[in-house]
Image: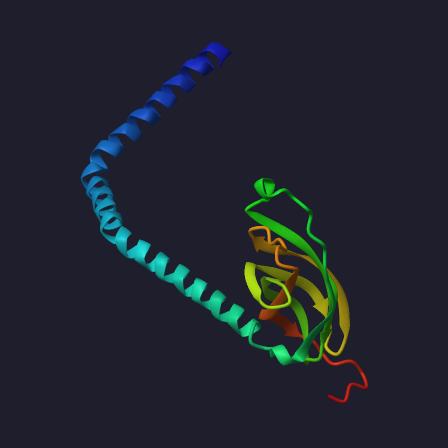
Length: 197
């Protein structure tokens, strides 16, 4: 068989296969067309249910995340940590018209951990007062997060930033900074050998 005869034979076979395929599609249309229509209708009917199920799963995951975060933040009481050697960077002397609406101050210090857990973060809330010999006036507030990895029974130095709303400035006399612990994050940490706690 020559190459031209082979090509004609192959073309004829391909055409025959295509014709059979078209015929099968047409003959089976009464079967697969209703199936496709039913599948589309099912998808449309169940779409709200699937969306609701997805939303429910996402809500459960978020609730679990929040619960885990609350559990992490309730392991260590405030009395089990101590902050010392706190040093707040001095303010810059901006003219009143150029003082920013928000500002940051560097905070350095040492964190001591007397709990049974490794402390990984501590949140602080600050209030800033302008005080003279007679009275004080609150002029700002802010917050700071100390990211650390302080094992049980040990201490670590830290450096972070206090984020303030406004730019506290001493007019009466001097700025007085007060803070309270907003949260403590911790993870399980095995006591060291010889630890009798």
